[in-house]
Image (cartoon, rainbow, N blue to C red; front, side):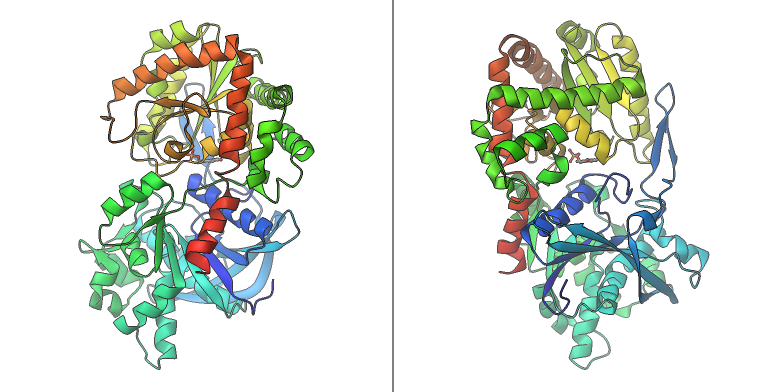
Length: 561
Ligand SMILES: *Cc1c(COP(=O)(O)O)cnc(C)c1O
């Protein structure tokens, strides 16, 4: 890449580029990876900045009762990344912490190259503690996280300078974790003005450079730090002098900082924009709905079908619109092949004995309370009546190591599976990752999504399913409000927000009714119409909920406006 041309610097605590690189935990990281890949396809001059996460987001083991244990992921960065000689230094608790960078080269479908830099403090010059800072994603306590964010934000900007990036048109903060990049930019602005410390005068200049995407209404997604901790780690008087810029309710608040330092802020779906505007009433907040990267998430059999029928779709995901003219049999055949592959893997891993003729429902995501993974099992007898001999279910997901409730949920799902044995087969796949995700979203017949509204800002796994012609049965939250046409692209659980009173028993009843009265009969008794729904998923939703469309909106609204 020509480093004298202006670039977009895209900062994210996690970036998921490929399954064997455990540098992501879930949707946020996958989105970042899919964004970078779209930039490579569309020839958008963008560079990614993230942390190396040498121990990865954990390796999940499940025992026979479904109890999760975690291990560091053993991976070798040099297998995927090239080490660079450049060094940057940041101050942490008064110590100079040395940072090196590794680079991943992402080649777009047209040959354009986008680089992603992984920051790494595991250098012999650093203390053991400092060496561990780029080790574990979302591990450790607030102190550890704060130090990591100093490395990501301040270290990231300094590394870009060390690498020779002179002109950065925009700094895009993918979530608030990277907001300390603003401190470095304020320092740079102050130095340009001949001052030693930054002041309010520098804020407007920095704002022009920054873009912020907020990703979740869930409080744990917004980092806050005690001021005593901030004083100790950062030791910057300006933070206390300019509390209105940095703090909310007496704590340093990364979301608040990112909001205050950005000229463009967005949520990740239309409905999330509304929620974010309520949460942060004093700011102008737009919405750009997330997407997924077509080439990454289409299963082999579906990708081969698109290559045959819609040549050029990899460079232009919009053209999936033309899936409308793919004959039904071809869509069904490609799906059947993806389903075979999935079930072969499921049977090998879990000995579930699933078969291809049975309607198969999939649910996989981070196991966390608001996603309500247990909703499907609210009434086991009803589920057994509806599904006996006609339904099989595949689950996957990791609970965060500190989330005891999440771990108990996985254990419970194992118990439900036991209780349903002989009537409805339920398999739980361990170690949900990008590989398993791609097989599941393409190989099941229906993708289930049951978050508690309005907590799911967007959700992307249902978009991956749509890209593969797999319809969603989903609560009307996040992206589904935009992608849902009842009976055409999938089915709703419950009613629209505003209309709905969030009541769990109603949602469960609605889920069961949809399966029993509409979806299973359609699948078994009117296969042509089921495949029509599949085709609409590709043509209407696959063509739109992709990162090609998404990145073009960022270019128009946030990057080069
Ligand atoms: C896509 C994906 C996610 C995010 O899915 P959501 O539906 O947004 O929760 C999480 N983990 C993996 C491995 C994925 O592939």
